[in-house]
Image (cartoon, rainbow, N blue to C red):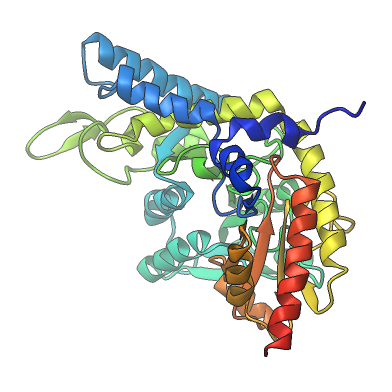
Length: 416
């Protein structure tokens, strides 16, 4: 008897996936790169906080506040251990990865970067890792350079080397591209950065739920993530930074909670990580993020990665059989650890038309520029369609999606 797949083991944990599918077998959710579905464990954690331990953290002497604070700080410790941080003081809770990058751009950037300094980005970056640095450049007159990609959609290391100079202060790049699916060689990038004493920031939104990240092996300086990408709730994310760097960075926002003492004329700042966490935080969401991490850890990132590799290979094999489809980024054969997604265009058709027709068949995919407009301009495309998978996805779903996609393309072409 065949062992159950990871999808078969886990689909029942996700109400939206299991309940809708059981109603009419007409929901295929292939938009996990935009936001993941949430397991019962995470939903129950949120409900439990608000129904049993709802109180503000750190400030209260009563037992409810103590319980909430304990759970909140435990989530910080879980997050630290998840990525191999040295201690939980290096984990700053933010609303999402976008806010985390903005925190670095304002706090570290405003206090460190000056006119003529250089920051290296890539042309594959999500807007959240482009716009904050553009704003910093406007404030400081620093220079932004953009690393290109190879013909098969991978980071061009030769181009990186050619643009890296003694003026480079930071390389900020995505770990796994939400459009190309390529997995960037972070260790190699970090090694090159250290040759000119530059820092490295990694956007790990598309990798945290799919493969192991160990900061002990990556000589980087900042890492950001959003909980809603790895089975957690929206409205919570985190910044990890090396403690010695965070210590010298000024606060990003001012207000309650982040101070040590406040006077009419001035204030002093609290210890890490609290000096970066002004105001009442997203307490229930942070606790639920910890629960989501535990859920993923219990499944095992190695098991997740192995199953998603099988799914991704099958997805590519199916798509490559459909005429007129162009897939962006490296194939699974070209890059073994690429992301579990496929972004594609169809000659003569708009991705929104494809997505809308598939939606009538109960198939959810993404269409548009995926917050990567510069990358789309590089390819000469206005938009693309994207199917993104998770460990809950199945071979049968991929087959049904591929069949429906082929029919949709045929229908649109026959009516164009």
